[in-house]
Amino acid sequence: MFIGAGAEDFAAAQGLEPVAADFFSTPERREQLERALNSDEMLLDHDGAANSHGEDPLDPDRKFGTVGAVALDVHGNLAAATSTGGMTNKQVGRVGDSPLAGAGCYANNATVAVSCTGTGEVFIRTLAAYDVSAQMEYGGRSLQQATASVIHDKVQELGGSGGLIAVDAHGNVALPFNSEGMYRGFARVEGDIEVAIYRDS
Ligand code: GLY
Image (cartoon, rainbow, N blue to C red; front, side, top):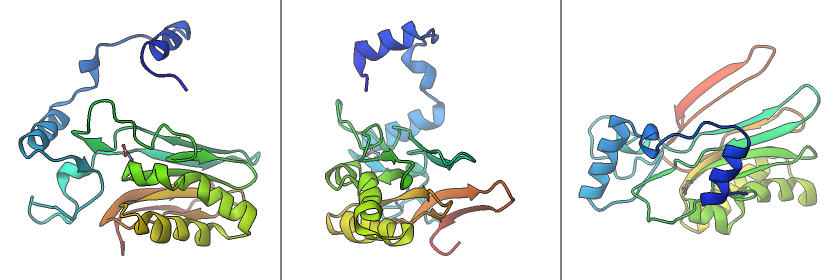
């Protein structure tokens, strides 16, 4: 795990092209940040609870957050990836769950691949992604049971909001969340493709 100058040096040693920080800034995200700064709020993605923008049950200011992916390949390899964009106007120096293996992201060929989105502090305290794997490995739970326990019991009990996407070693998929919605989808080689945003979609 690399951060700061060490990460920059490592990237350079791998031949990656450096870019200025504003390369990653877009007008939409800049305006979103300005609104958050003006209202002195820290905005969690995928949460409609404080929607003040009209019809959309998901607040448009909260839907550009964490991006996660999980995959099972034909050889039985499980992989997970999680971005770090989950909160807007967060405190300088704060590290969320996304880059922390076991908290926002975890994969183990014996059990499951998991990527989380939501209130990072709670996903860190619960080691949410790893707990799904541990419940399956040590508790004999199914993917559905383990993911529901983590999101609807453990994360919920600590006041956390969010969800996760997961695929297990047998190709079962779970996408539970306790927030208003969660942008999600999955596809199988043989053709199943599903996308959804809200609870009942
Ligand atoms: N889940 C993203 C964050 O807390 O930063």
